[in-house]
Length: 267
Image (cartoon, rainbow, N blue to C red; front, side):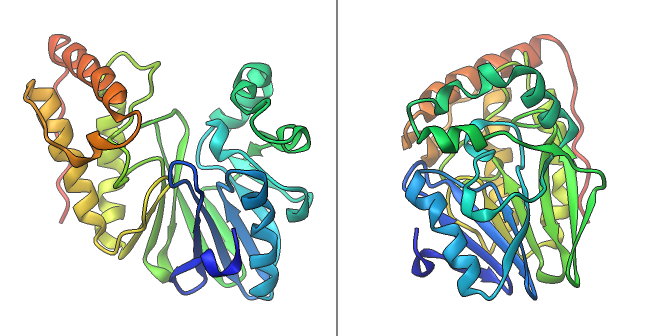
């Protein structure tokens, strides 16, 4: 991951894509300070984040993981021993269940990077000061409990974590029996999406039409909740057929449980 591979999607918001699953890493800068969001994935890509920050004339002062999944809690020694935050849910899960959560990384990345993964602590406030920027955190339980999205209001940017992707279907937590938390999560994010101009997903490409991503996800979920077939183009991507089948089952449970869901209107 080189400096040339970084895309500045808005002033001071730099996005890099991994060769694996189009996983994004984001660096937000304000003056000499840099915040690193969801750094990923392979050793050389992780090592490439620090040179980018240095090229920008900044230094890493903190990191944040949008949720607890192993590909979002990675780190690199060159980024320094700085605070690394996530939601309380994610931090507690890593404290209590580290041996299980770390398993997919063992043998996949170097041992020294495995040791750094998941060293997160609960974020104390839902607003993060970064120089003269204010970053608002929005928490919901779609995709994973304690999932965070970051709104950079001065730039009109939403970092959505594993939501609103152009390469991944809506991806409800496998541990949830139905779709209620996922639908509620989209409703929580909808007004934020509506006021942002740029959306950065955890996997895929940034969008300058964020509402289009929300509309695509809602069309897909409406179809599976109605028991209808869908020709969503994201089904062609690796692993999405399996995710779809699981979501279809969660939609069936939602219907049979009689759990109504009313969307919040966005004005």
